[in-house]
Length: 232
Ligand SMILES: O=C(O)[C@@H](CO)OP(=O)(O)O
Image (tube, rainbow, N blue to C red; front, side, top):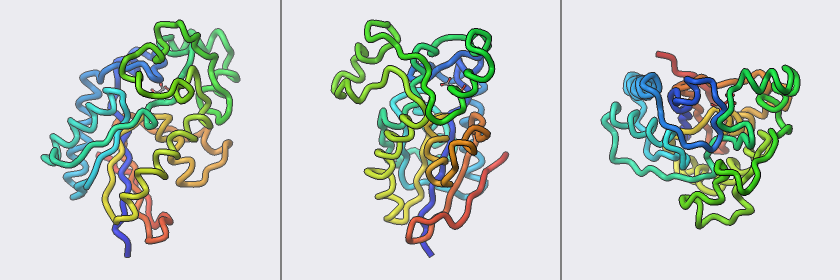
């Protein structure tokens, strides 16, 4: 039997989650509740005797800090942590930094849900001169601008997440490693959609709470043998 195991954790509550503001690629930190959720995730892994061999995360501090706090709590901080912007949250375009209820009012429930939870409807794009655009953020200076989105549908997010998953993460699973990914509500929804072969209709209903852990065990053909959601 293969020992390949994928452990997904959504970052703990961020300051924007707490304030009900769309976040996307905005680099906000965890709230106190978020730090507590990350600690709890570490304790859960300890309770279930799950010690990752490697950790992947995004370039956004709410996911990086969740991984760091979790591994600190697990007393397992020596493992390699690889970071890629391809695991960043879905880019929320012009909705970034704006109140969710105000946007729902402006666009109406149906359009709001189609963008927020649907598969192929993006929010309005950011202008390249907008201060929220990462084109001018020095962190992304070495990335080709063509790869830096101004807005994304879940379908767009899925494409880049899967590129990274198939180019990097799957190689570790093929070595029968336990792989931890600390990422975001929608970048993880995109990955789960692919792993569980969900349809665009099914993904609308699927959400991952902050701090939740979803775990998959694979056979040697990378087929899912078992899925577990770890609850405290
Ligand atoms: O704001 C965001 O980037 C995401 C995740 O926090 O929000 P939502 O859950 O509404 O897609």
